[in-house]
Amino acid sequence: MNELFTRFGKPLGSCFLVLVALWLGLLVLVPNLTMLDFALRPSLPPAQTGGEKDVYSLTHFAYLAGHATHRQIFLKTLVSSALVTLVTLILCYPLAWWLGQSKQPRRLVMVLLLVPYLMNEVLRGLAWYIILAFSGPLNQLLLQLGLISGPVRWYGDGGVLAGMAYAYILFMLFPITNAMSTLDGTQIEAARDMGAGRLRIHWRIVLPHARVGIATGCVFTFILSAGSYMAPALLGAPGSRWFTQLVYDWFFENGNWNRGAAYGLTLLVLCLLVVLCLLRLFRVNLASAVR
Image (cartoon, rainbow, N blue to C red; front, side, top):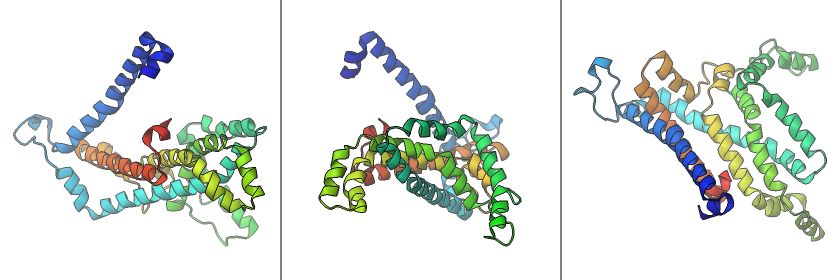
């Protein structure tokens, strides 16, 4: 706080603190406390709200714990989100290394990567819907190459994985690139002069240096994947439902806001626990990850 006042002065620094407090209060604290209040209350008609039946309980959480199908979808969402994070990391690491070490084409490549994201997320999801269609470009290309004997129905877990990896790849790429761009090239040269191979250089020098960027990218990608609704809704199949679709159904299809709030709160808490585990795994504190 003293650093904030020293840099911007007390009047402007106080304004920043007030804005941050309002943001945290109105957009984070109040919505989540409201969701907690809904999750602990029973779903009652308006006439019975505030009556003797309107008491706090864990009924909605117990319903989720006792519903085998919903439990399976919940666990599958967490595992699939972790898989999306892993695939995105594998795709981004070589590109981030190249971008971090190359100076000239970096800006041009960054601009080209950003161009598709100028479109709405729904339009990008629909683009993947067309690509993966039964008579879409992907099947036509594979048929012409002779790699498949007939059109393949790509919708389902594979389609959701591809759509999410594409949708959130920049949230993994930019933090890792930013971390690798600060790596001193003389360390790499010294390691090569001492006979270290490429894999050893990355394991002993590059990965430890970029762990903050990797942790940040993994946190962002996992949270966005676990909370995604558009990609599973467009690219999924009946057997590849996402937990967010259950939350949506409770709110808007069944009109049971209380149970939907309980489901959403459960997903939020579990995601926070996974994020803390990721930060502990990479030995990175929260302040470094969000910096």
